[in-house]
Length: 185
Image (tube, rainbow, N blue to C red; front, side):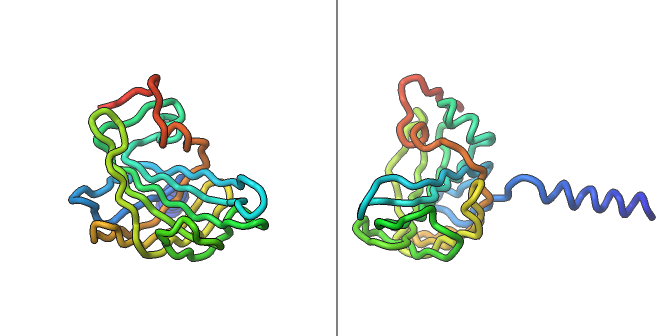
């Protein structure tokens, strides 16, 4: 009995480690097999243009932080980028809360945005499909990000899911792969 209890507790503890990310739905007929999620948060700018943001990238590539910051990208992979931002002179990293998705870049205050990408066989981002409505819920925005989303995309499709993203300085490499990047099959 004690051994069974110990094994059960060990399994429970092991199951609680790491991050859990799930995406349900598809865009343009392609679903996303979420293998990893990474987050970047911070504040940039000054005055009325000051912006605090949390950016979460969910992708079909394991060890995303190591691979993406090292310039290694998977071809024909789906990526979902979730962004929650706050703009204004007193902007900080967005706290936990539910943020409406907007398509207007001139909106002030707390807003959410989401964009779907599928890389091509040369690992370049294809045509983005933005979310037109929905919500992004942040449960935590420190040491990575945890939360969920419910999105309606421009093509009429819907995506829902949850994320547990580890902190990673990935942004520049993911959005602008350069000539020394490697495309992995």
